[in-house]
Image 1 (tube, rainbow, N blue to C red):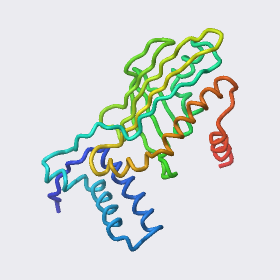
Image 2 (image 1 turned 90 degrees about the vertical axis):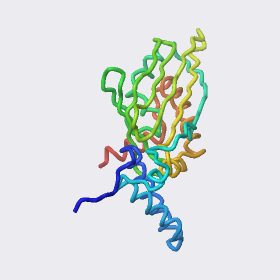
Image 3 (image 1 turned 180 degrees about the vertical axis):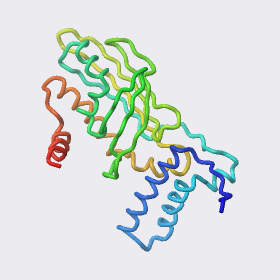
Image 4 (image 1 turned 90 degrees about the horizontal axis):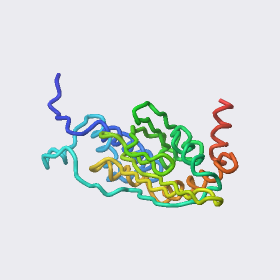
Length: 230
């Protein structure tokens, strides 16, 4: 029997809905299983993700709800005691980013400026994946990137590199994360909180320590040890 349910949710939002619905269902069941309103909200997210149908979108005649405000918008700077060419080359090899960014699991370059990214979801609730492309590049001065359309998470940013001579290199980093639009996005956005922002800021300090001393962050050392033992 063919269903008459109209699919009006993008693939990115469907994935986000399932992730968010599962997480909030689990959290509600663990903390307060009698909270029927929360259970219903989580169930609606799961329905939305599995069916691809959003009643709210159907009522408004839209496929997405417009909101361009980032959930996380970070800008920070650090001085690295290494020559600008060395610092730039290390960052430009995007596969290096997970070495010091503890919120990233992997980054794989695919050619033509495109790359696949995978990050840990705050709270230890699995990982999330998206594709990005380098949008601007000036050797030893600037790298800018942006996630591709229909990505599960909208991510982008830029890094500028400033030669300080004997002092090394000053890097200025701006990174933003924005959850998918609509109700699913609002739920996923709650996972991207001040703790996540602090983690990214710490990752930039990790970059300085890794480039200067070659020392992995403790969290990465721990994860690597677990992986090797498995």
